[in-house]
Length: 221
Image 1 (cartoon, rainbow, N blue to C red):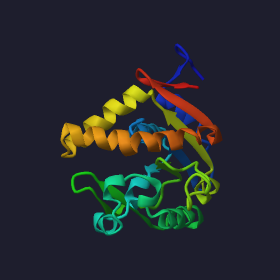
Image 2: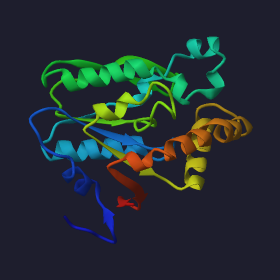
Image 3: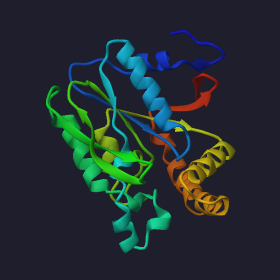
Image 4: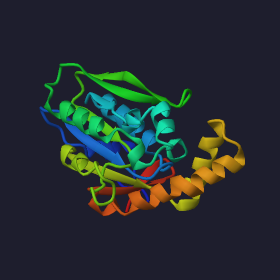
């Protein structure tokens, strides 16, 4: 493996994903705003380019619908562990593990334009590698009830970190682009997102690999 200034390229990271005959589930965990979706998409592309069929299966499609959150008076906390359908996420992870390659498994996605999940946003079929990215892949039930089974359904899990100022800047931008005023965005970041980030950070020691973005690559911590 080639190293340049202690930074791994995405191609080098792809080489770390084991090859096998069955489907391999690789989790990519980390706080909101760390760049998990970007890493998952880049890694997926690198695997496909290396003739290793892969697909991204995000956790975000398991957000509870806004009408449910409104009924629970939880819309302002959207993104926290109890605002997801963890049970369905776990059931579908198990289905992804147990279903033979070649048989279709529908997987929901999250549409930021409408701020809602979309059923069967992607169909996993022939891909032997599923990149499961999300915030809460490494939590215990003591940290957030209902999430502990996730880690056992993943063959490996990486953690993507980022400095707190970077998270804050990215999250503010995300919320403002999504329609919040600067004051509303600041309140969301300070009151919910960064609290989630602290919860998630406490789980990073359970990851098989901890990474931080560095230029065009990723540094192993």
